[in-house]
Image (cartoon, rainbow, N blue to C red):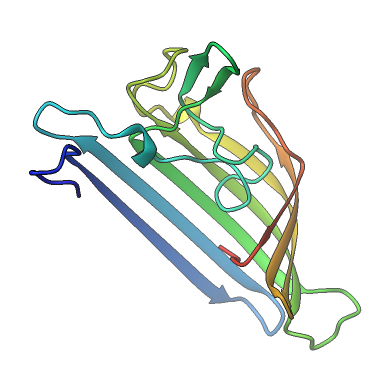
Length: 180
């Protein structure tokens, strides 16, 4: 929350729920859901640097990081992601041991399905001004997680299922330091 006497007057609310359910000794199902909403008050907008973003290894894999949702027409860079004041992300992931690694808990594989996007009032294309299920982007793929000596690593190969012409896709993604 940004409150007076500062020049930024806004609020942001977000909620995330993760659920892990062992299906057997070797298989675990993970479900993740996230929602977020923010806005300005006292006649002020949500500051652009407080926007929600979606896309990338920590939300909707297969789409470039922070590129889903509202876009701006930048005179230098062309059409770029602007983020928004609303965000919805959902993930389902089935974890299982890496074939050939037996009982090594530091390495595991998964198959996943992701969905999500952002919405906001500052969309150059006029497509993402309010929540609409048709704006959700979907992907599916496989991932490898490794708790390495330098920290957690996650590698993903994803197939975007419904990219739009202005979406930036990225089939291979990785992250260091966070799993989800």
